[in-house]
Length: 334
Figure 1 (spheres, rainbow, N blue to C red):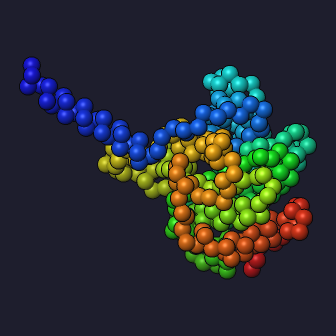
Figure 2: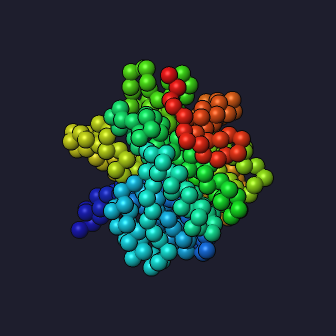
Figure 3: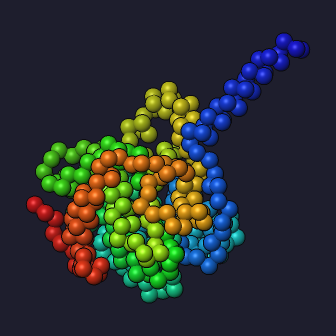
């Protein structure tokens, strides 16, 4: 009988160590227990994955949650799921297509008209390594959705966020931003050969640069802006990647995926933390890797690049830079 004890003990130790290692690699639960009763939260791309889990976590804490999604059937189903699980009736779906400037403006007008306040904006929605698609307005899809769409949405809601201060803006970026470069000569891949990975990295670098410049512009308003890398998660976001579609990779690397990839629930913890933690109320312009603040890439810290990207983005989406009001939009540069 005793001869089995050592192997069982070893197996238990290995399993326990693996679980602890996974928790270390992927981060843990949001350390803040703060609640947000009476606060209005907008989460983009909240019908599935990290966005849905973020909305769920914030609904548990008593927030008035608006799920902003393109697919209303899935969005309504997600809202129903969250209401059922949290018993919070203040969870609802609204249409928002970040690949359409018209849709973004319509959504913002509706929020401004109907909502008394907006306390937390979580810019979560993203497209990752898709084919060479373009948005309704002719932007490269990843740059258009991941950066330009959220850039316009945030600017249109700024006055409402300021009026609700202290308020917070959370922008989801990615560790992939470190491999990104902002090509001002061809932001939308009009002339060079399309590289879906490079396009994704550029879009996520743009998110960090936008956050930095936004935070600078918001000094003294009571509105904070931070960016984060939620970790690599098992979500629909990676559906266009080779790893996701390869049976060989899934079989051979499956154990490593389990170790290194977060569940959507765990990947939602950093967004939740930045949204509710009392100790972060005055923290702004920072980049978080999971639950920890971390320095982003050198280009992400370049203030001149950030200012130039802001100006280019404002031009592309038709934002009046002097007054922050939406114009009709401008044609893409040749």
